[in-house]
Structures are given as C-alpha cells and as structure tokens.
Amino acid sequence: MSALRESVLLEMRLRGFAAKTVEAYIHALEQLWAFYRRALERLSCAEVQRFLDEVITVRKLAWATVNVYFSAYRFLYEQVLHRAPHEFSIPPRGRSGTRPGVLNRQEVQRLIDAPRNIKHRALLAMTYGSGLRVSEAVRVRIADIDRGRMMLRVEQGKGRRDRYTILSARALALLEELWHWERPQEYFFFNRRHQPICVGTAQAVYYAALRTSGVRRVGGIPVLRHCFATHLMEEGTDIYTIKRWMGHTALVTTGRYMHVTAEHLARVKSPLDHPYNAA
Image 1 (cartoon, rainbow, N blue to C red):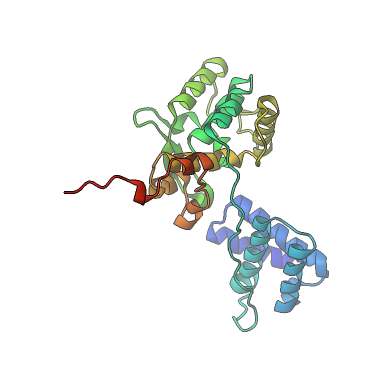
Image 2 (cartoon, rainbow, N blue to C red):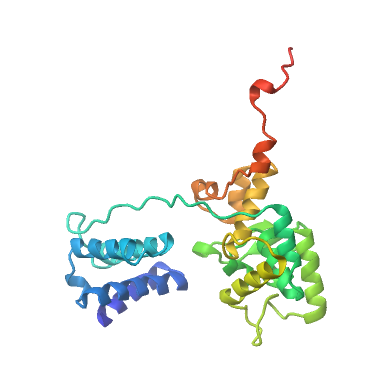
C-alpha cells in the first residue's frame, strides 16, 4: 500500500492533521491491509464493514480505538479514493455509554500529596487544577503561566486549538517550588534532553501515586481531568465555562464528565420542600 499510503499522507498534510491523528489513521489502514492482504483500493464496502465487526466483536478493542478505525476508513474511501455514497457507506457510531471514573476531593488531595518528588506532585496538581489532558500537562511551559489573571495558556491542544484555562494557586505554588529547585529552561516537566516527558511517564507517576496513597483505582491519569469537571459542576460552575476551560468543541462532550455524586445528591432537596415566600 506504499503508493496509497503516500496519497493518504499527502491529503492529511494538506488538511493539517495532527501527528497523532496521522499515526492512528495509518495504523488503522495497516490493520485493514493485514486482515485481507489485498490492495485497499479493491476492497468493497462490505469487506470493510466485516473487518470493523471483527475489531468490535472478536478483538474487542476500546470504544475510542474503534472510532478511530471508522474515521480512518471514511477518510480513505470518501476523501482520498472519492467513493460515491452508494459505493461506500459506514453506519454512524453512537457515543459510548460508559462514564469516566471520578474520585472525591479528599481522594484527589491524597493522590497529589503522595509523591515525594516535587515534579510529580506539580504534574498531578496541574492536571487536576487546570483540567488538562495528559498530553497538555506534560507540555506546560514557563511562558504559559499568566500570574496576573491566574490563567494557563494551553497551546495546540486537541484539534490544534489554543485556549486558556484556570490556574490553581496551589498548583502555581508547586511550580514555583519546582522552578526554585530545578530551574527548567522551557518546560516544567522535562527529561534529560530538556524536552517534555512522554505521556507514558506521566501515567507511571499517576499509578505510583495511587499505590502510595492507597486511593482506589477508577482509571488512569485522565481521571484527574474528569474530577476537575465534576467538582466544578458540584460547586455550581456553569457547563459553558467548564466546556471552554476543557477545550471541548461540543457541549455534549462536556456533559459526559458531569457526574452527580452521592454526596452532591444528598444536598439536593425536592422543590416541594423549599419554603414558599409569598409576595
């Protein structure tokens, strides 16, 4: 599929696809080729759908991974090979019914306080305190800190979009302590080459903090981002503000993070039980 691969790569470059999207789409195409061992241009729509059924029912890939496969094949056959709708059609995928895991505030605090390494505590604090994706957290730079407004600039987040989100005073204090001890040149969370640490390293930091703190495991480091949104909702922050801080394009995406905990439900009363104040 070398010639087709180059056509796909060219089309993605022209459209400005992010590097991770390019990598994911190429992997999906390679998996399709490995399944049939035939030129992808010659596959029928039914064959592509049969392979998608394979990854869903037999390989049981994660919901998000399967969605990448759907998107990659639509891109190949509709945008690159220009198949007409009557020749190629994949049914739309619904949204996952699985809600992200969430911890309470006390558990989050225990988790952040668990590492002895100041850099690790700062990383966890920034992820939770600003609602960052792990790929955004590892790339926090000194230049991104806006002390005057207590905001954090997130450069080239998901979808290559820049945004501002809230900056926690406690997280800022940890960054200041980190700067005092390690004097980072550009990125706060850097490796030996002074480049951002990888996402896998951040995950390892999170899991080590879980073990040290004894906090229950409900997912990986993205749990801290989920907690950011949920705890803000419980405090009464409107969903539109949370959507903006988290960098979502659709309100329905933010809605998936809106957990209603048992503690929050216990504080809610029926409108019938509220006192009626006559005018």
